[in-house]
Image 1 (spheres, rainbow, N blue to C red):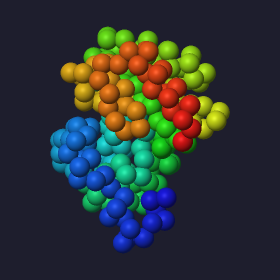
Image 2 (image 1 turned 180 degrees about the vertical axis):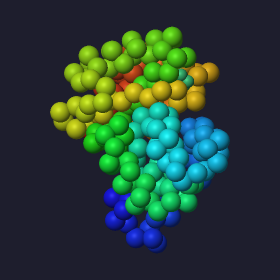
Image 3 (image 1 turned 45 degrees about the vertical axis):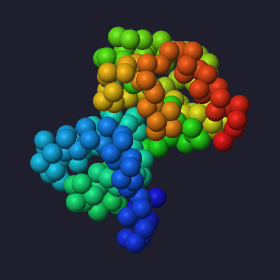
Length: 177
Ligand code: FES
């Protein structure tokens, strides 16, 4: 875990430069932190925003926040694990995050989520019993122009339908890890 990793390895924990430039969510998070003047005492607020955007907080994201706010990664990890309202990376091999922000919602995100819940036999926030798929929701992920959006293993997919989403996660389940 982040707190147990030595300084020399912390460098590789953050998102790659390619990911930082291609995933708009990091840009939105950065703008949010800028608005808060990168204040260290705004950590909880920043983590809330990060979770809203990504659906959960993984090591990479926590490290990114730590670096941006110039805080020790262990401290950020400690706060993220202490408060029950933060979700760390779920245990599924694959992670599906359905955006439930307004733009996606009005274009049927609830139907996508409902179809996935029914098909997988789990509720949002849960992982299938075989550990293959974790299903999560997020509020606006910054891709309203391509709503409804779903994030499959970190990749944002545009204009999804319930059929698209089910096909995708069923594919994961058939091919195993
Ligand atoms: S509401 Fe889903 S991307 Fe903005």
